Structures are given as structure tokens and as C-alpha cells.
Image (cartoon, rainbow over all chains, first blue to last red; front, side, top):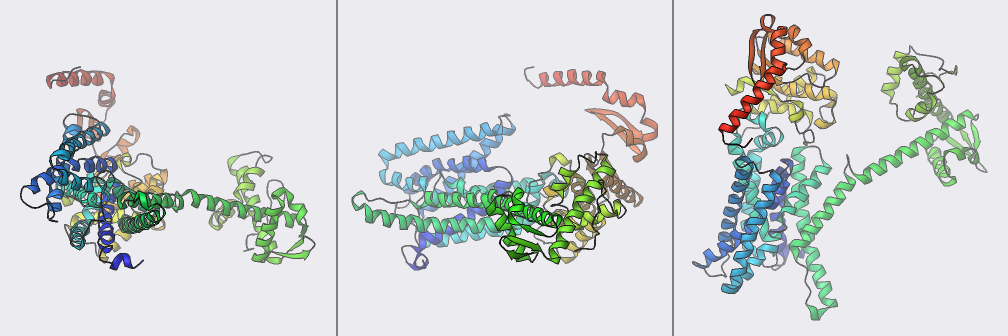
Length: 438
Length: 186
């Protein structure tokens, strides 16, 4: 794998792509948190006419082989993209066109102009047209060491701006009104954010292309948001995920191309890196959404499974205690299937709460007895609380208590105990086990 | 001038999903004094922690703001405003949707600020508490209805003029004529 960083032909696409995607991901966090994800989409499509014009303009002065050509292209792309931003703002603010409509309109309009220019160039400037296509879907393979340098400098500029204006960007994104009241120059800052956004887009189009660059703005930010609750960490994580997607995407596109080429040499198949990077980034996002510590589906499933196991453990302990301390596993069939009960008994044994007597018989240990009594205590405290304080009939409190006994924390237990004046009997005149058990 | 004004936004205008913890939010109160290219120092963090403690938020200072209760959220924003150490406090409905305990804490802090000679300007919609809480009242309905010492102008007549139907009708027709002037089709 190291040869992707050392081989003179491979290192430029790999490293430059990583730098590019790191930059777009960093700015993407701002775009994402400002809830302007679709703006990125419109602005990236609006670079396309700039690409065509830039190529035509630069061909008047320099040969089409020079890598300075890309500087002109990026410059023109930036100008048309900024102009699109201006058009969107005018449509929204002056002409009262709804936000989504103005974004859609500008996207289609500018991209349409770009396609028109490109289709004309196809016949008049065939070489330039082919170069233009590099920017439409991105092409990493043709990047050279000079590109590494260019994109490293651009990343440095962007990252330094974010670092220096960290305080301001945080405030402006989180609470623009507050930024105003403490005297931050919000219109200047909004201008900086606009320049950064357009900057990130024109940096990104060389790698993943006009059509897909907005994915590299948003996907790493959305992934990072699922993983963290802090702005600072979100900037770091998004950048890392952006770079990671670029690395894996580049490697995958090359390796898959080799494999396919070995299988079907006559068709000359090749997997482009740009779309692959976007696919990998999308995959990373899905993983992050699934394993997000707060909202992830998998995380929640695991948490729910753990809770159900705990509930079954506690119910079994309680049942053994009520049956006098010794049971056969067949007595516990109310609490789950044979396999579930078997698993629970193994867990209880590991905790040292039950001792196997053989032939499917188990006996509570002294620790296990304490534990069981504590659960009963919580159950009966809660029943008493419902009857005394909420006036619920004592025949109706059992079900609620059977659920809540697995959830109550020691803190709540203490509060209940104080509130109920250290009670000895529950509403059904059963003794409440004393509190100093655990 | 700007450094002397602290502002607490209306709850509904805050993005509660924003990835920021209570401590980071309160620290924003210092950003105005720090100015460009300067980062908060240890003393700023300590000052933030001081107000977090004072408002009983120590237990949740590492939590994201959306995870707090309504009252805690309001106290967090108050802590940020207090950290600004301003002279004038502008608050947009600070009592909206908070629990009783928070309402008392808020009132106590606002009274303390008043005693220190600070100016507090609140947007308020609970008519029952106006008289006990405010010295000066400004009744607004699109335009100024009445302004003056609360005990002088907070009368039934003025209040019904503020909320009354006749006023609303007048405003609607006024608005219409203004729009026609600006060239809109009615």
C-alpha cells in the first residue's frame, strides 16, 4: 500500500486527492451546519461554464499542455460560481423567490450554459473540450507532483483561515444574531464563508468533478456530525474522513481497474477515481449513521439488546429469590426461551450471583440474594410512590413497577426513600427490603 | 458601545441541533471582548465555569445544548449573557417555556443585575407578571401604544388598546395602503 505514496505515477493522484477532499470536507462542515447543503450543489454546477470559458481564454495565451492552464480554469470557475451565488441571493432577497426554487433555477441555468459552451467546443476546440471533461467528472490520474504542491498550498490557506477565524465562524454559524450584537463584522464574515465555499468547490472539481463535488462537501460533515457533539471535533473528524475517503477511493479505483483489466482485457475497463471516492465517502457516511453513539440504528439495537438482557437477568434473579433460592431452569420458562434462559444463567454465574448445582438446578449466592432483594426493593418503593403520591389504585401499580425497577438509579432510589420516609411496607403489605444491601 | 450590550435570543430562533456543549456556548460570551485572532485563555474558561456553577449547570456543562431541559437551556443562555459583563441586557421572551424553578432563578439573577445598576430590556407576553417585575413598560402592537412607568401606563385601557381588535383592524388597513403604495397587488 505504501507505493501509493511513493510511486512517482501514483503518489500525485493519491496525495493530491487526499489534500483536495480534506479541504472540501473542512469547508463542508460550515456549509452543512449553516443548512446550506443544496447551495453547494448549485454553486458546484455553476462552475461548469467557468471551466469552458477558462479553457478558451487561456488557450489564447498558453499552450494546452501547460499546467498553468488549470489555474485559469479554476479562476474562471470561481468567478462564475461566485456570480451564481450573487444571483441566488438576489433572487431570494430582492425578488422573493423561495430558497429551494432559486437554488434549483440557478443550478439548471448555469449548468445549461456550461453544457452549451461545451457542446460548441466539441467541434471548434476538440482538445480543449476533452480537457473540460476532466473537470466534469474529475480525473485524478493525470495529476502531477505540481498539483500536490498547488493543493497543499490551497489547503494551508483554507485551514489557516478557518483556524484564525475559528471563534468568528463558530459564532456566525451557531448564532448569527449574537455575532451581530457582540460587534463581529458579520457581512465580512459571510463574505469569507462564501469565498471559502466557492474556493473549496473549485479545489474539489479537479478530483471528483463538477457533478459530484458537493458530495465531498456534505458527506464527511454529515458523517462527523453523527459521531460528535462538538464543533471543533467535527472539523477534525470531517477532514480526516474526507482524506480517508479519497485514499480508499483512489486505491479501490486502481485496484479494481487492474482486476477488471485482467479479466476482460479486450474491453479496456477502467473505474474512475472521482465517483469511487464519492461512493466510499457515502459508504463511510452510512457506517457513521449506523454506529452514531446518539442516533445510530446499530448502537440503539445494541443498547436495546443489552437492556433486554439486563431485564431478563434481574427478572430471573427475582424469581429464584421468590422461589426460595433454588430453581430448575424449567421453572423460569416465563422469562424467555430455553436458549435465552440458558444464556442468562451463564451470565448470572459469571457475575457470581448464582451457583450451578447440576441437572439444570441453580442456587442463589449471598451476593445474588442481595441483588434480588434490591430489585424487589425498587419495585415496592415505586409501587408505594405511585399509590401515595399519584393516587393510583394499588391493584394497578404492579405493571409499571415491573418495568421501572430495571431503570431506577441509586440517586432516584435515595430520593424515593426520603420522600416516603424510609418505608417498611409496600401497598400490598409486603416488606420492603432495607436500603443498605449494595 | 457594542461590548456593553448582551443579548439573549428567543428560544425558537436557536438551532438546538448545533454541535456545541454548554461550556462552549457560555464561553461565547467572552468572544466580543477578545476580538479578532485572540483565543480564550485559562481565565476566560474559569470565568465561564464560574457562571455555569452559579446557574446550577455544572452537572451538564459537557452536554450538547439540545439535550438540556427548557429551563437549563434558558439558564445556559443567561450564563453566556452574564459572562459578557455588559451594562444593557436585551432578552427576547426569557420566561417562555421554562419550569417554575428556572423562572425563580432567572428572576433572582435579573433582580441582582438591576441592583448592580444594569439596564434590562425584556420582550414579555405574560400580562399577569408585568406589574411585579418591571419598572418601565412599553406597549407595542406594530407601533407604540404607550410607554412610561409601569404603575402609570399599565392600565386596562392601554392593554386592551394594545391587544384590541380595533387596533388590529387599523393596522391591517394601514399595512395594505402602504403595500399598494410600494406597488404590490393586493
